[in-house]
Structure formats: structure tokens, C-alpha cells
Length: 230
Image 1 (cartoon, one colour):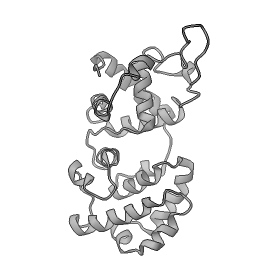
Image 2: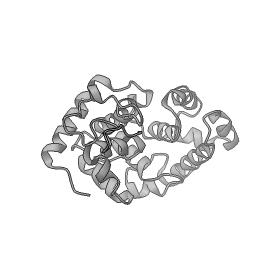
Image 3: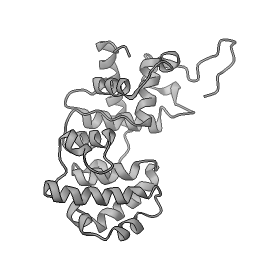
């Protein structure tokens, strides 16, 4: 994948951060830098919509406000509290992470990416989110929303079809993170993809990225003049 020009990267960063200042969502896990609370939110948000997560996140943390409390809890009780979020392997993994964090790291989630990824069920995305949102590292995140935004803005339909493998996406995401601004930038990327640059009806007409977006207008006109299905 060819790198975006430095000027294009700066414009993207500036526009996205300005958009976030105006449109960013007020979510409870954005009011903390506690690594455990951020971990809980990230695990809950896997394959689950934000509006379903918010009340359960608050309930879960009232019951298990710390790693120690969660590690000491009965796993069956943890699983029952998780209902009805679904994807019920998640509370088991979260409980296992708490136990291992207590046993190996005295109850404090590690900052190091390799150490984080050795914890049960913690992949590159979750490790990056904890490092960026809790510990202030310039770590990238890459979820479905982020991938869609980056693909539309920097690649466009033709180049997007030629991208192979996860490494290219992670390299692109990492190259875009502005030094010292990973928290706001990553939150902005996820919000922008979730609420503005959506899968089927993106708000292209009012989009701050429109001047440089390689997918504008979306969907692009087909060769015969018809509109392509999204």
C-alpha cells in the first residue's frame, strides 16, 4: 500500500480532530483513563451497539469496580450479569483476564503490547485501545469503522480491492496517528465511522473529508451512468 503524502495526512488529522470537537459522543468510558474500565468497555463493545452497552457497562462496574473484585467473583455470576449482551464467551475472557492480571501484574493491566496480548482474548485492537486510551501511547486502533473510513478516504474503490492482508491496514492506521493525540484521534476515527461515514448512507454532502476523499461521491457512478449498489 502506498503511503499518503505528508500534507494529506496533516489535513486528515486536522479535519478529523476538528470534527470530533464538534460531534464526538459523550460516552461514560471516555470520562476515565483507568485501564480496567477501558478494558471492560472495549470487551463489551465487541459486536454490540453502543446504546446497548452503556447501561450494562455502568451496572457491571457498580458490581465489579476493580480488577480484584472481578477476579474474586464467581464466574457464573459474572456471566449472568452480562446478560443480555450476547456473545457470552466475553465475560469468561474478561474474568480470566482479571485473574491473570491479579496473579501476574498485581492487579494493574500492563502497558506493554506484547504483555497485553498474552492475556486471554486480548488481540491487537484491544491492546492498542488500552495503550492509547489508558496509558497515552501513540498506538493505533483498527476496527470495522476505522477500516471503512481509511479505505474510503485514502484508497477508493479500485485501490481498496487490491489491498491484501492485515499488515497493510495496521501500517496505514499507525502512520496516521498524530504524536501525542492518539486518544482523541482514535476516538474520533471510531465515531466518524460509526455516525458519519456509515456503511450504506454516509453523510457525504456535509463531510469534512469530501475535498480529499477518494470515494466521494458514494456510491460512485458506474461506467454506464447507473448508480452502483452500496
